[in-house]
Each structure stands twice: as structure tokens, then as C-alpha cells.
Length: 111
Length: 269
Image (cartoon, rainbow over all chains, first blue to last red; front, side, top):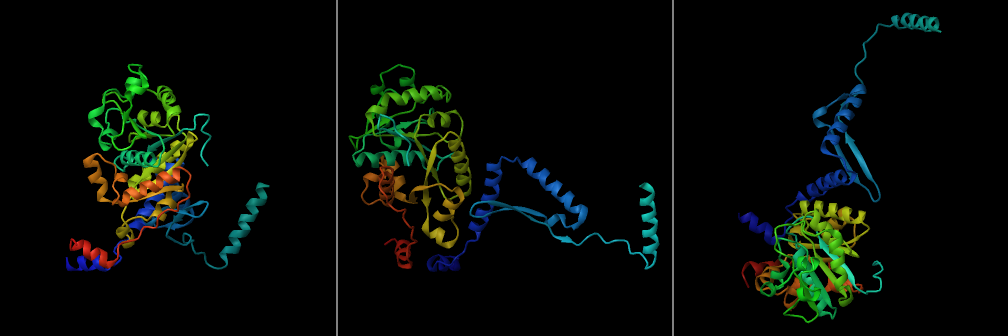
């Protein structure tokens, strides 16, 4: 309690809540202004995750969508922690050429 | 900057907010009083049918005979429903009715109602109900501009933004009043600043009113703060009135009290 009084008297900055308020407000205002329903936003999020999942190993829990405001435009920011491309099957050296020739032949036949 | 007022020379403003309890009625009553004190014949209209309060803030609650629904329905002459203020000969009140039915009149009827009074007044301020239903739509009919009141709080700002959008869709320009700002909390980072609010909402600010106990005392007495020479809020409302009249007064820069001011406040000195 003494520290509370101390902080009040000496005006120590205690709040980070305004930073939260600003980003939360920005989030809801873009929704409200764009007219996106919460369900639409959820669909968007699910679909984005699906698409990214096709190419990357995605960390879904830490996937985040936010809206950053510049002077004239609003930017959709998608934060998606990923590992690089899905690990390929490792082929022994030499076999690659054989398979490639096989593939080329089949392509040629198709023509 | 303001729309053409036509031949009547009367400016009609709706005072609205979306969110309830942020200070619409106080703003209507006090701003109206400020304009009257500056020599402008002003009519304030309580458009909150069923929940009238403008009369109480102005201390005129025991003088109501007819109300705006009576005028709209032709049950009395328009002049009969007007109540002159106790504090200024330039200020008149048209009270709301206390009937339960909020949809008893529509936008067209409200506009016709305004026409009865435009020739007699320089300013008409309409105290809108909270929300965005029929009452709000009525109050925002036939107006030149809107005064949108908000506090520096998340839910008030969100609702204000919505209302600004709805008004803009009707071609009505909004001016912002930021109410109940606490400079100490802003300094601590616990309250959004004036600049924050302006950045978020993106409209012109016509006034800033700091949190001030004298406003509550004024409501207790039925005498708006502009009549109290010691009230800081009263001075803020005076400036808003002057800005509406076209004077270029820069918006105040709220300053948190110094250590010594806070100390004396804590000690009750």
C-alpha cells in the first residue's frame, strides 16, 4: 500500500493498459467498419491456416491476426510461426536421374 | 464548414453518443446555457421519450405542462410547450414526454416539429437518447451537424465510432466532445489521451471537458456548471459554445496536477 501512495505521489508510470486498449479498439473498429461478423472473421482465420498449412508446418496456437493502422491505410498483419517446408523424402544419389528419365518418358508419351 | 442554414439562420445540432451515460444530457444543457449566456437565443429539446432528464439537469422539472409529443400531435400550440430557463432569458426547453411508447413519433413528425421553432432561435440542440434505434433516428432528423460525446474509454469510443458512421451515412458531419478526461490517469498511462481518442475516431474535436466534481453538484442543484464561475468544466463548455459560434479557440492541453497540487489535494488543503 505504501508503494501505491509512493507511486501516486511521484507519478510513476504504472499503466500499459492504454496500449492494450488501443490495439483492441483498433481490432474491433476495423471489424465494425468493415462489417465483418465474428463468424466471418473465424472462417477467414481457418481458411488462412489451411492455406499456409499446405506449404508450411504451422504453429496454430500462436497464429495471430491483427490490424495495424498507418496514416492512410489499415494493414492486415498475419503472424504465423512456422517451420520451413515440410521435410522431403530423402532419395539416394543416382536414383534421382533414373526417376527423372522415367518421368520424362511418361510426359513424352502423354504428348 | 457548416452546412447552409437556409433562410432561417438557425443551426440545428443533435447531441448524441451511442453509449449511455457519457454526458449527452449534461452537454446539451450546459452547452445550451453557454450559448444563451453568449447572447444566442437557444432551444434545447429533450428527444429521449420515456426517459426525460434534460428538465432535471436544467432545474425545470416542476414547470412542465406540455411536451414535444403534445406539439407533434397538435394537442397544444408549439409555443405553449416551451419552458423558459430560470437562469437565462435566451434559453428555452422543449421537454420530452414520459409516455412509455418510444416509437410514438417518427422522423417526419420530428422534422415538422423543428420547423415550428427554427425561425425563433439561433441554435437548436437536440438531446438524443442513447442507442441507435427510432429515438436516435428521430433526433438525427433535420439537423445540420452532430455533436458526438465520448469518454476516453473503450466501450464509449466503440459506440461513438458506430454512431459517427451512421450519421455520416446520412450526410451529417460530426464534431467530437471528449468528456471526463483525467489528466493524472493519462499521465500514468492508465487512460487514453485526447490525441489517442482523436487518432482512433478521426473527426474534428470541438471540445474537451475534464473530469470535474462540479458537474455532479450542478446536476444536484439543477444549475448547469457554466453558471458557476469557479467550475473548470464550465469554462470548457463556454469554449465549446464559442467554437460553435465560429471562434477559433485551440483545444486545451490537459495538464496533470503537479506533485504539490496533488499533495495539497490529498491533505485536503
